Image (tube, rainbow, N blue to C red; front, side):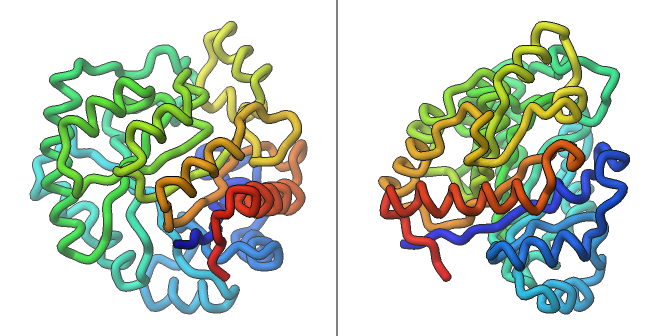
Length: 301
């Protein structure tokens, strides 16, 4: 069993807060990722839209596609409408052998609204989330039949945010629906990342590693600020940042124990003026290699 290391280009190209990263290009981000040693990148909005163009683009920088965000609207769409809405991305990811499509419900989220405090995020009942999970299972089965696994991304500001929401979604869904496990969003939500992994590790198909600066998170909570306020203020960072508070060794030990063999993707949206993307992305890469070696978790080269 061996894992592969990837990165999201959000540190260089932030789609939610584009002014933060206006001085950086996707091409420069791709070059940086390859130079550091990352084997894959998640799809960004500024990459070529067509499959052949995207394949050539990835090949140019010596990386592969290791997933990518999909804004879901299944709460307001019927299954046929949602299948039609995501079909092109599912087919493209299958053609490029991506490990999964990173799906998150966005019809009712506040994650992209800088004026809405994260405390106002939609909180559904157990029955509502489980009913959604049953419906989402059908979409996941269809996506798998097309050759692409669907991994659900719990996210701050969204209806599936904390450990309770994840419990309900997993309990109400078929194993065809897998879980994207994100350390930073779990800690931000007040969950214990290790406990969630212990409970739902058998459903985890894709992993995002990002750290949290606790003083910034405390400020977000005390001042009742938005998710994007927190991002701009530096709530997130990469694994290995001495200002971070998450124990990645404990998490990597768990991944080794459960024989995880998928991708570990660094995703840490920050202000590049305060956290230079190349420097911090290399810190994350080096730290993951170090904790993986200590856990005897092999990294595929």
